[in-house]
Image 1 (cartoon, one colour):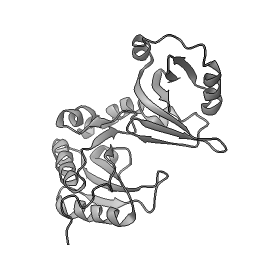
Image 2: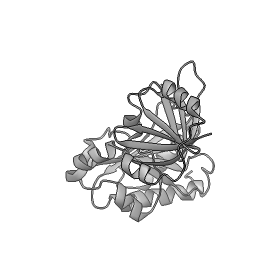
Image 3: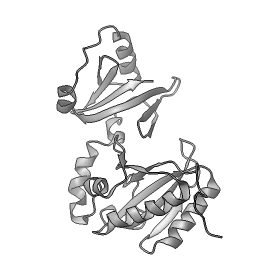
Length: 236
């Protein structure tokens, strides 16, 4: 029996990722990947069957072999990268929204920022032209969370919309609310708070936790700088 409206309610996270994972069906420049985060294995299998049987443009749908470090299974979808990709993504998400009751947000290529799903936002951020993929992928790498933390001392991170959790062996995890991510120039041009001298001890602790990053605090905002980009956060 097929899935019905709201059958997957409270079982699928409302944040999806686009082009975060490499394609198994061909070259990344030719194939777009979507990934959903699903609680438990059975609902993951149900979603895979729904995606495979409901959309003729889907090249493949599959689930991860087990739970990921955030406790969710991943369901992956692959489709051709072309001029119809945005409409196909909207079609898929409209179908899954009927099953979950959720309005989805997406991030592109492990960016720090999530965006509301809309034709305008998908057109802005998702690369649909294979010939432009390499160039635009390099631009996206500058805003990639993996690259930002690549030189850090942390073992893993979890990013869920505005929540960032940093994990390090033998240390308590750190929780942050993400406020912004932008170039160093743009971030510092928009700081209205005063430099916080009183919490210098916290800044030193964060440097020891993260590694060789420039970290400053303005009011309650913690600014972590790396390679010309700034992550603006508040500690939770």
